[in-house]
Length: 393
Image (tube, rainbow, N blue to C red; front, side, top):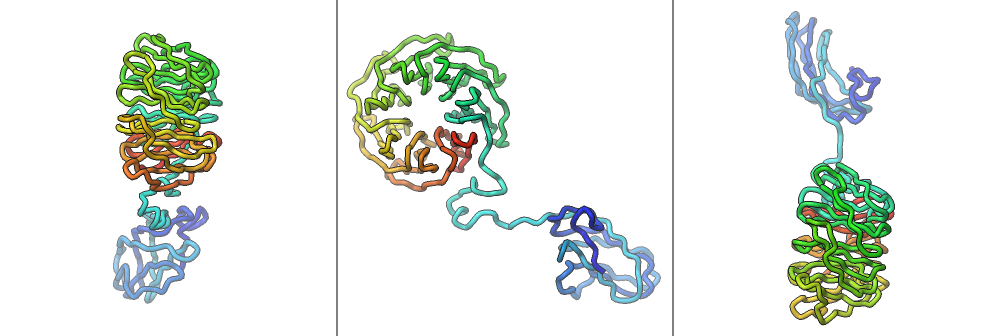
């Protein structure tokens, strides 16, 4: 006889995807010496038995493991006579593909591409910038006027904070989260534990980039053509340095603040201690984003140039230029490699900073822009689809 195991209308009321059962089978009132076999319907009956009994023997139980066969059924075979069979399902498994990744994906350690563990998470409208505080990923959602907090361990948004208008940069100072609100001309300071805005600081016109130097927060005012230095304890602007033409990005190398002046095609430097310009300036094409790897400054150049420049901070010269995807918008160093978001190319480029070669180009649709590393993963803000993608380093 065949018994329907799968489905709500079946004899066992189990999920449609059930693939095997663990059943406590008991036979009662056998009229002849016989044996019982439980097996998947549609398969050849095995010669082995699950239970054996003699005529007139009392209730005889045994724990049976059986795969589910055709149309979610299992078959039960009795060799001789008649017998009453009781089945109590004590457990089951559901079917799944034994491997959701290709051999190539496994070889490249692309765990983020496993469809059973999606690495894309919805956040606010227009995610554009990311920061890691040692525990959580913070996402500036430009159009929403909010900041999302993501727990990397659970891959869930654990909180959302309302800030100023068009927040487009976020940074961590070791204790607080700072957000640049471009359309409000302010900075929001957030307590990461309470998720409360604890201070609002007025800065220049269109604050667009942030960096922490270990003591101060620096902010680039894109339309204001200046860079400001903010005391993180008093929340006061303590210095203003200018003039920069469209300062788009900032980086800190341990002693100097690097400024990407996109409209002037320059990367300029400020002495973080004296707040004065440091010469010479370095000419690059349309600098959009900056990152420091411990010895070099990496510059993403968009505006049709679609390259990354490597600047040696010891001699302030461009020592390599690497082609990446279309319209690079973000760059980050993960401790080993350089990663670049290509907004127009819907991809991310991974670069070996030692050999200056492209190691991989990874498809990331949805307008990838901001990028951050948490020590194990790369996080990417997908501006067009209101999502954040998580890639394995």
